[in-house]
Image (tube, rainbow, N blue to C red; front, side, top):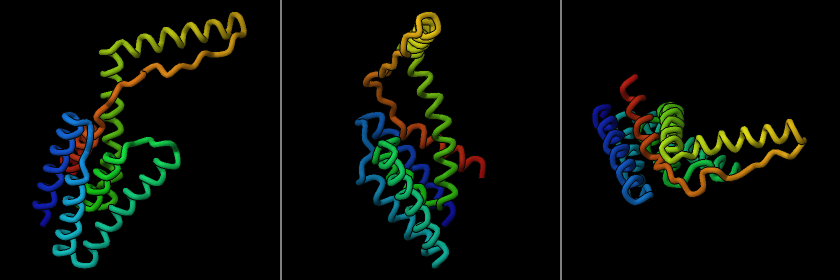
Length: 169
C-alpha cells in the first residue's frame, strides 16, 4: 500500500501543478478522486487506523480552509483541496510538512517573479521614498498594492513541498 500511496501523491502533485500552470485552477475532478483513493487505500492497508489517518488529514485540510476563509482567503480553494487530498493520502503530518515546505518554495517563487517583473525594486524604491518623507517631513507612510494582478500558481510550490517531504521520509 505504501508504494501505491506514494505514487498517488506524485501523480496528484504533478497533475495539480500542470493544471494550475496551464489553466490557473486545480480541478475538483482531480482532487476528489485522490482523496477517495487515500481513504480507500489507507482503510484497506491500515484498517480503522488507516481510515482515521485519512479522515484526520481531510479534517486538518478543512480546518485550514476555515482558517483561510476567516483570515481573508490566504490560499485558494483549489490549493486547500489539494492539501486535503494529500492529507487523505498520507495523513495530517504529511499535510503540515507539505504546507511548510510549500510555503518556503512559494516564497522563493514569489521573490523570483517579483524580481523578474521589476516589482521588488519598485516596491523598495517606494518604501525608501515613503520612509524618507516620513522622517524628514512627518508625512504619513504611503501604502500601495504594489504587485497588482500577478498570479502565482501555488500548486507548483505545494507539489515541490510534497516531493520534498516524500524524499525526506
